[in-house]
Length: 205
Length: 205
Image 1 (cartoon, rainbow over the protein chains, first blue to last red):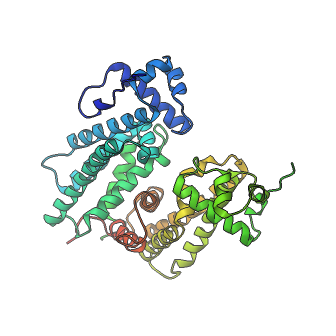
Image 2: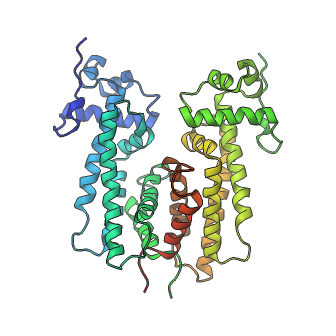
Image 3: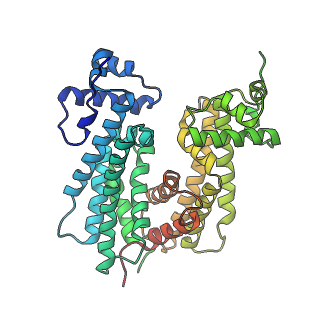
């Protein structure tokens, strides 16, 4: 047995089309059936490939899961970053961050659910660390926007970490109740969240 | 085989001491190992009883889980209700609701995690419906507080459902990162959340 996995690709190398297809099938099954209830055989069958071929590309089910969620985090950071207006006010930047993150999650719902459900299950300590670093980077970039708003006097003197957590809680919790195509879009929901977070419930008149 | 479970107790009957003890052990194991990885044998062993005795009280692992989360929801509603100041402003009521809910969750962390992780896994449709009704009642009581604030002019004209969702997201998401005894208390965190939700990030001066 000399099964080679693509695990080492996760840092920088581009992902082949076949691997991407298999990751897509994995995402869908993890989201539909849950991580525990999905087997390598299920993924191979749903993708129309042999188990041997699946094992050629991935060392294990966990390997597939970890790559899905890793790619999701990586893309999330650059997606959101690209949507923040460089010369906007702190309010505009925070709102853009929120809408960017929620839109990304809505468009990548399956890997998002898979990632949320089993983030900590990764047995590869090193890989988990890299994913945690990316997540921290994501959280930190929001915190920085809030800090800038406080420093300029645009925002009240709140604890930036707590404010960032509240904002991300709203976005993260959406996977428990939000269904794309039913009711408001992710963007509309988070736009209202931003109104409340930025302006507050209490009327100022 | 004529195993009788206590399932029908969940509506009103008081829960015996032994059953409560077994539910406590179940909560702890579900929280520590996850629902899937916990077996009836694990629960019996940890509680120091035979599997037969465990099955005398509960039809299945799912039965145990469902009773834990059902009791948690039931108690949550009355706990929070009792803490809302009858003659307070809408802001005071919303803040009291938030602190009540977060404090309850922090004090009942194990059943809370078990409940959050597997709420939808209940195969008993009827029981799930009853739990959903209690949850809706909980969400509705927050929404009513927000509606009252809007009607009196104290709050801005937000969508009460969306505002309620944002508030509950902040509280619900705490089980993913909050550790009692480390850093701020649940009450301190949610007090800051209330400052932001009520007053907004943007400075009004």
